[in-house]
Length: 84
Image (tube, rainbow, N blue to C red):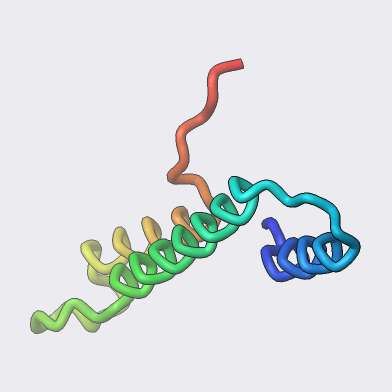
């Protein structure tokens, strides 16, 4: 996973030395932060209790599917494979 805080620190250090950092780079980092926040929200929602009677049971197939999907999203397996 990309360490966005380290990238921010590197950009700040570069700018202190008067190196040019393209605005596109800063925009990309901001988009990555937003995407991580959205992904975390989706994972939290998927892992939340359903609220319906009987869904609290760890053997509920519906809840297990939601937990598996959440785990896949956390690992990044939901992304499409790029063609070479």
